[in-house]
Figure 1: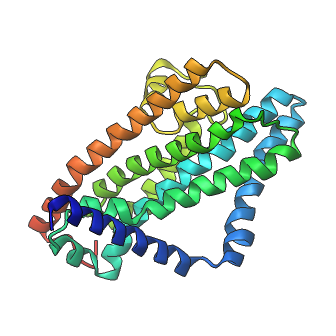
Figure 2: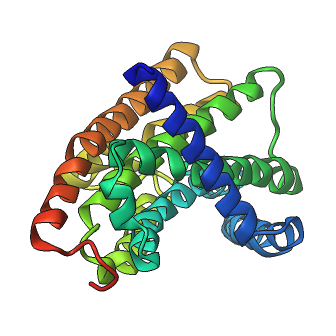
Length: 267
């Protein structure tokens, strides 16, 4: 068996394992009436702010931003995967296996990104028409791959963060919540990034969601195709950069944990 075939087999099994985890956590009923209703309520809340301001443009801006960011913020929950493995006592077994830990963890948590992308698209499809948001066909179909791109870029970012806090399980909740709030605050979800001071605007360009969201707004507004493709390319570049950093550093974080014995049940 070649290395490529072996890696593909690990990826396939890790994805399947992650999917089983997801369906153990959620039933169709709990996902729809628990998670999905919560997200719809959140998107509706922000859209109502625009309605209270009597601004259709602001309503559309807030609705699109808060629906799409769900794809990114949900992917951040992948940070929980490594700390969960540590809490269950299975992290050391995965680290001891011959497969690269980064490949296993990156593949296993993909279900989180898929869930976020699906939820974001459903939020746009269900809540959008309630506030007279139009979807010009067929260009609106571009929103699907663009939302998937945002989810994957955010997932790559969260995989890096997961490795960063691998030995500090007590910081998990703080990092997850701070990252989600940062994405919502800095990535043009509720406020255009041009309103930020230059350092924060520069930071926003380095984060996932920002460029993908700009591309989705332009798509639904009938914007220039070149600008849409350009921002999609930038979102892809940001995601690829974070994925490269995650794959490069994850093994080093694991190595530090091996040396100091911190990869155990406790923090």
